[in-house]
Length: 129
Image 1 (cartoon, rainbow, N blue to C red):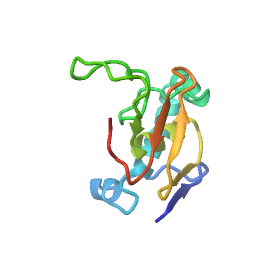
Image 2: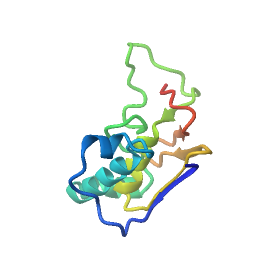
Image 3: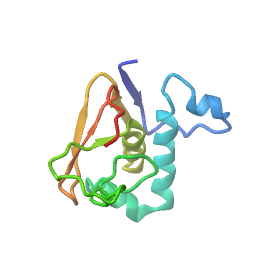
Image 4: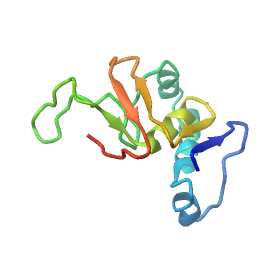
């Protein structure tokens, strides 16, 4: 499955088991995108920030709000590459009101409009730094 696409006009799925939602061939990306669509209704301000290109804090690694906060007490150099998960990208697309559109065979680089920092999203690199 090199490309995952789902139109925003498709209704959010309901009454799925955990296995159906997270263990399918999409690895839970559709569930993440649907959660982003729900969050869009719950938090319009957050949705607006995402629409403006901000990589807001979500449940998955990829946002830039806490990008400079050290986990181990030591700040990372600003030039270090940042990776985000595809689950973040799917949630972010839903939050923005977009179709789910992820090419699993290539990388996507998004520069956060607020922090002006790039984040790399790609399937083969689920290394989170």
